[in-house]
Image 1 (tube, rainbow, N blue to C red):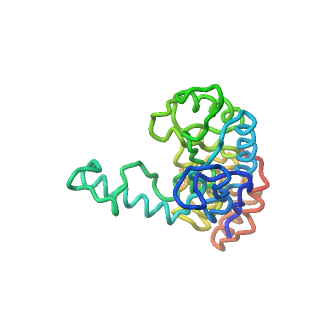
Image 2: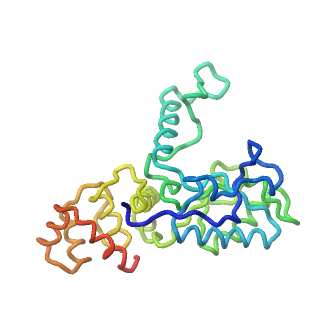
Length: 266
């Protein structure tokens, strides 16, 4: 059982998917994001912030629809395989002889367990449906940034450009902001994914490392191998001798996770 359980998002938040099939259409005919099973869950602090953002967009007259929220690590692995197939084939265009839509994906896909979607900390927004009143089509993303960034949402692109790849993608670093600042995006995503059971190196050592990183301890990169730096950090975190910390690791004592979760984030 992972230390943190993903929770359904608020039922008022709409997905982009219509009850009659496909995407788009009248808002009244959209499937609530929470009704999409594993795709409609998020980290608890993210679910709270997503509701606030959705309400803020509605208050500004916009139409907030989510195309993707949480992504199961198995789904991530399958998508990454298609992306790797495309790269190995020489990155053919969709109308080239070497293209195979069934086995290839040209859009970048992060490694399994290393996407903010796996951590329940990322969303993809249906930008063309925002329709903020008084804003031209090339300024809709600017309006969303004005609302989202002060609420702690971080666009993955550097400048507001609707035509940019991944312009629709927003992350919520939240309590793992320190991890992102110290270790970068991939380790931030892995840290978050491990704590909710969707890392690619899921297991006691990796989850323990993720919790230590969340609390600000310097263990190097999360790699699923408990070494001297992790033992020292665990000893300091639990306020026990290193010999005791080693025994807890050897016995895979998951009771330490609650103690690590209770530490201040850094």
